[in-house]
Amino acid sequence: MKSLIPGVLRDEPQFACLFVGQSLSVLGDRMSFVAVPFAVLSVGGSASDVGLVAAAGLLPMLLFTLVGGVWADRFQRRRIMLVSDVVRFATQGMTAVLLLTGMAEVSHLVLLMVVFGTADAFFMPASTGLMPQVVSPERLREANALRGFVQSSGLILGPALAGGLLALAGPGSALALDALTFAVSAAFLARLQPRETPPEPGPVTTRGKFFRELHEGWVQVRTRTWIWSGMAAMAVYHVIVLPSVFVLGPVLAEQEWGGAANWSVVVMAFGVGSIVGDVGAYRLKIARPMAVAAAALAVASCQAVIIGSGGSLLLIAVLEAVTGVAVSLFFVLWETALQTHVPESALSRVSSYDHLLSAGLMPLGLALAGPVSDSLGMRPTLYAMTIIAVPAALALLCVPAVRHLPAHASGTGGARTVAEPSLP
Figure 1: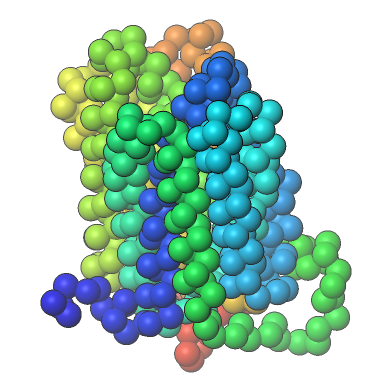
Figure 2: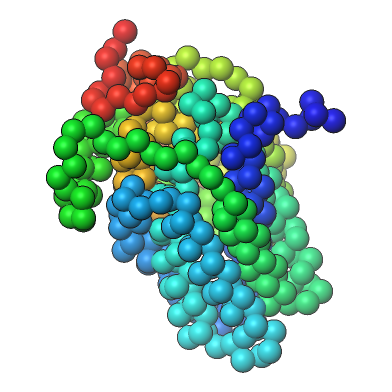
């Protein structure tokens, strides 16, 4: 039985504590992705209201992610995550009560999603920064892969569970269960005892000065070519490629593939591929992780042309499964590289810039995808997305600092270098 438990969970008890709580929370998040739109519709909301509620949860991410990064590097990350979980438990619980009692209105859902999104904005940078405090440097890749496995599995299990609850008891019950997962996550965080983050080298002269601390985080990004070039490539992926999945893919499925049922086959195939990618990232030992990550991003960037290829549903599903493998590999290796090579004291600020470029810029692509496809046509737009995105990923692979970044940081005990790593 012991052999069935991944080694990183056996050997890293603090990570195991974090992992259990966060796994349940991820499942709840995947459920809410399905439940929230139907909650809006259940109170008489329109398609525009669904978009308004979604935007209400996203806008705080744009406003507060960088603040969350500074705070997570300044204060205890565990406490920030704990407060975030308590707030999200309260907001989702209140939403569930309003829905179950028939008192909910669209305005209520908008307001609660603003509060939820604000708590989310503080949670994510703190979560990224906490990982090196609960996992030894040599096990970070395994830990990130295991977290990715749970997130990928949630893409399949969460919507299925939400669908069942929606059919049996309505969206209020699904959101009530989501609220409960935040309470469980908070309980595990309360028990967590992470290692203290070592202070930054040199005299501490900028504590308490928000914009200077934010600038220090930007310096960590700017002085590492592999980070800012990786963020640029990721911005292209989120703005150009993902709208093909979230906007154009469902529209094309409705027009040509027979509707949502067949589109769900493609989505599930992608989820299965993501699980395979997470397992591969867990087991493989990669000497040059960012080189592999850049190649994986190039494969992931082919999703638009696959969707618009006109191939059979089976072929498209198989190819989307391949891109799912690539997406998981990229994000596991990217997060591990950040946690390995960025000083712990600045890690949350660096990750906040990362989250801002991904979550922050994606709405631009989502908003433009429809009008552009109306002007150019569905398939020309999907082909153009690939023509832009794949070269951007290949350009990342051409950056020497990306190709040569080692799996482990220089120095003893996993110490993290401050400047651009020297090339072999």
